[in-house]
Image (tube, rainbow, N blue to C red; front, side):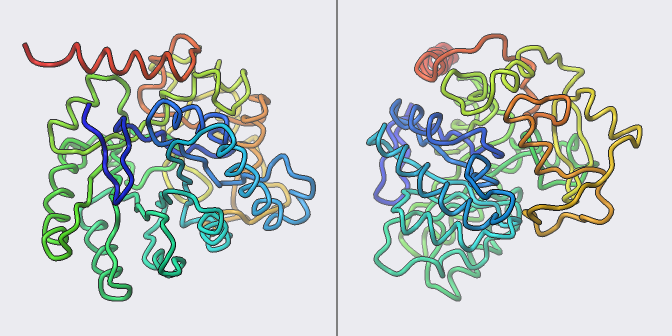
Length: 357
């Protein structure tokens, strides 16, 4: 596999571990991936779940936890680390500032358009800024805004297709429409970014994400022009993943029929592993509880059938009766829990074996 260059960073293995909240990708998983030559990513969504005062001072708990997780990851790796910060978070600005102050290598940001992300840089900061988009139009809108307001363009672009896990940047009817497939989106975004590359004399690598599971998938998208890939689901069933064993086993036990799309309380479709909790929601048996956080700006607290933050916290801790697991379309293919090192080795073998004869 070719190296992935993001500004002055050289990623030996062109694999970015996708950020997974709540508490699924923290310092343990991120440092393990970075040690293997990829980019390890910490998700900041409700990162403070283990902090004292999480339910009484949401902002302070998350800020403190982000600092701790970045520093802890740095203790275990000299590799490249990133954070994933959703624009939909009510505390996104504080998370941006904290990550940059801690000297994080890369910020990945989606779940909304990060139109003003460069404002958090102080000119001398070395943190790279990478938007996550679901269309060439979104990539163009973000880049044009950054160019006009900050004389800055993205250091890379992650293009997340409709087979991803978690909240999706598509309407339900678009998820199975070939016009919105990742295979179609990648060339479109590459073409959109080419004009900005020429103007700035800067390479903007385009990274494919969403449903990428095997080494042969990596080769396929790199042959389409992607400079690298982002993979999240595949890293859940590793020993180093920060989720509970019960969460990981939900992947191991899942069959293809169990992967489904739900209407999330935050107003977006989401891909999950169906379970009894999801069935209860469908039957109308779940009811809103007091909102401790207002963590997502788009969440309709008054009319939500349940608190998504609490459901995800419960799942991360292993209480699957009161929560559920987000997962990509290929999550059912996971059959064993392995180390990150073993996983990376298998991806490299699959990549090499898929080369044309």
